[in-house]
Length: 209
Image (tube, rainbow, N blue to C red; front, side, top):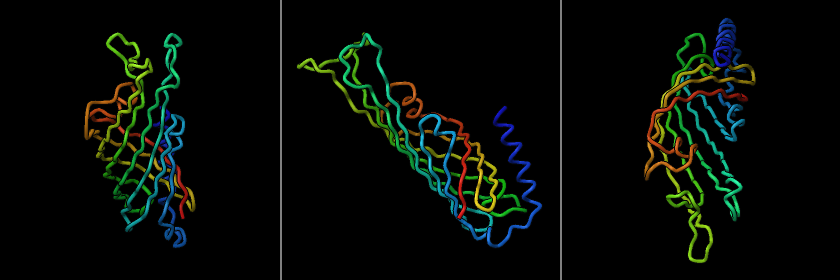
């Protein structure tokens, strides 16, 4: 319900903007730096840069990263540090704005993008009974597993831009294509490293210049 309310509000604002003439001084601001405030709630940092190319097109580049630690139950003794999962992500996107009343970066748009992620899981090794594996010296064995994932996708969205601020709401589909090996073990790494079709929903806030 919250997402529908946000979409309704942005549609209303978009209609209000369409009735106005965009001053040349504002139209010349062809750059937007954006962040995804919702992703911060789950420990993900996403930063994007949009550059207007023509009246109805733009390109977007982005970087993102995040991490998660895995604590073990108290009965798992002698664990010197928790397991850790971290990832880095690059995004490149091309957008076409198709609301003729507006001009990029205003209004409705459709876009194609590609993402490339590097996923790293540093975790202790377990045997078939779920017990920690130790080496000949009795030390816990900790291994580093890494996967690279290519993610092509498409999206549609609405961007409301004022003199300096911009809000961008989008919805899309993307396909995860891991380049090597099986999915990483553990819930979040496994979801991010297996071959599957997943939705993409987001909201970014930005500054125009």
